[in-house]
Image (tube, rainbow, N blue to C red):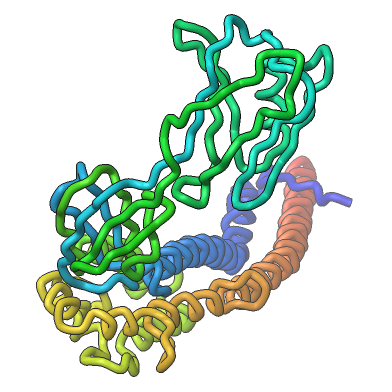
Length: 431
């Protein structure tokens, strides 16, 4: 039952104000707990942000953790009208002389002209032979037009494609091999057709292989796109002629990936360093010290590259006193020119050891895993602390409420007592 307060009616004292002030004093521990709860929630939000920054760092590291993604070589042709070239990490460095004698061509035949595509070519069997395999298509009465023959050939799906072209003088059936080069050469036989005008064909282009040379070594290819002449190099032949292809270390591409990596790394360090300031929600948090220690240790670890370079500092990556990274591109370029494979092995998984980028990817997995990573464990602990604070606040709120009721009862009793005394005093005066 609520306590009725007379608020100093008899005494003239502002007892309501006194009660409010005393209750406010009693509530101070609750206010402190609510502040603590707010700080913990803020800390969880900061942890989430740092975890996101770590995942961005992991993405940047994944661009450097395999030889294929690490690719720091470029290929160029001195005359791109003759051919173009691209390189990968497996490509040999150097300049190569190329001479293109002829391009690979697709074998194409064109039929004699017909007045309409609906003209009959006859019924019976039309055959074509590709790579020693003969394919027969059969035309029957009512489905024996030039267009029907085109459809039958395409439906066979045997490596020859048919189309119809109107060249102004009539409709012609065009047959084209699906493969370029000599492997795509085919023959046709229309002698099995009768009752219409069987097509006769002329050769439009002969299926021949590309012929070219690299540093005087003759090479033949059925395609004008060559991926197996120089290891890791793709050549796209465009016309005949001579040119040179240069494969060189591409420090610019690697520097771009490293710059992205450095930016992501420093974002993590900046977020951690911000919590080292007095009053920061996560000041002194052991998790952040652990994260920074793991990252720094991984970057500082020497790797058995099997070559000239074993540490990031030797190839231009350095850590300052705040733990932040920077890149000396001149040093990186020199390292690539001196021992390219050693630089690659420093970052990627190799036969000798796990590279730095690969190690970071694995380490960040362990820290950020939703199931049992460091951040998951820390957040669970902080959420448990919030639950304990909520329980404490609830308990103390009940205590404050009881305290306020007790004060109101006492002051009410005092006011009643004073009122009685005043009433008795007034009666005595009347006598």
